[in-house]
Length: 103
Image (cartoon, rainbow, N blue to C red):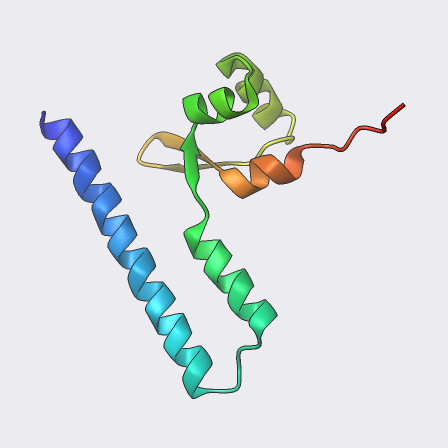
């Protein structure tokens, strides 16, 4: 139970930090002319991208977890880690998809 509470606490802290960063960026945008809309969207997406576990990434793409591992080793997917855990950015998974030509 302690592990679940610890994970919940870490996720809750990450959400709070993300909200604070978004508020600071918004204030900077409003108070200075340094941020244009494109820069603001880039900053916001960098901090608000949904992180997926290996299992969630595999479920999203409807493949086995070994395929996720292989794609990561072949640099098709980029993984991120913290504390021995591995995550994938949802937007990067979507960007890794290649459009196929229709016949």
